[in-house]
Image (cartoon, rainbow, N blue to C red; front, side, top):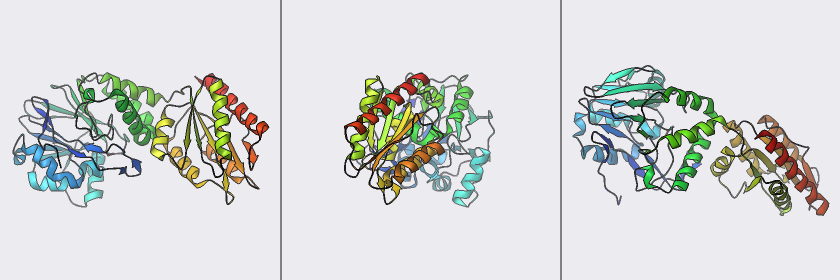
Length: 398
Ligand code: FEO
């Protein structure tokens, strides 16, 4: 695979033993242009403990990394913080190989593991706040239900001040570097935001609860199950999460549109001009040219959603129906909305986009601007006015 299969030391007794998936470009519908990692961790305490495993095809890579530190048969405990298959795909095989004394998961984790593998792995349920002695170390478990599955939990190693946060604080990034402080801060922010937007945004109230639950813990480093490890200044990513969970509007409007003969695109440009004239940033995304998971990243840190659609066969343009269906599921709060579009004869597309925003509970600042065929200068002026109106409403909400 062109890389070392050695473990990476985090502290004297804690090692990264995960796997790097450089080829991944689609993670259940989320575009992963930079690949990902599946992180697993080995705690070399009196009771040697493996925290999470990796996706099934990466079993050998994980086992080679474990073997670079200890004989895998010496593992006493396995912790499953989250049942999704990117972390449990090789759990049954690992259990068969290692024969651990105990497997720990949340009560919901036991149910989820049974529903995935239809075999009794012999796991033990741990309760919120419960601790397990590893001899010279302690592992404390914290339920983080719906962050982002019912089974999800964090665990904390107080003696080393390490928080194992499964998907929380993670990102899809197959870097050669294992630590966040070795990576371009702009990439870190973009990929962490993309992960939050696509995976955690609908569960923002639970993110707030998890941040409150972990606020009293000593956290020297955060070790998520994807991407680089936050060994320096973990407060920074905790602050990002606090801001995203609050979903406060930002002085940025996201204009998602599509176009057939460039009429709706010309209208989108005029709406953007109106927004910018008011000092509000306008980000234009053509739905069929941008992956929905990248549009979601822009959606996380904005204050308005403006939708522009042509009408195709009496319907909203299909690429917009796709994106709006996806964004609806993310349950973003505190947004201002507007709709515009060009049509040939009846203009049902704009009406359907208006209904979609109502279903997303995003209030419109004005009635949609709808133009037959090609917008003339007065029509473009109406679009600029719509941009001004969105900007004014957005600024009132800041
Ligand atoms: Fe990385 Fe929800 O699994």
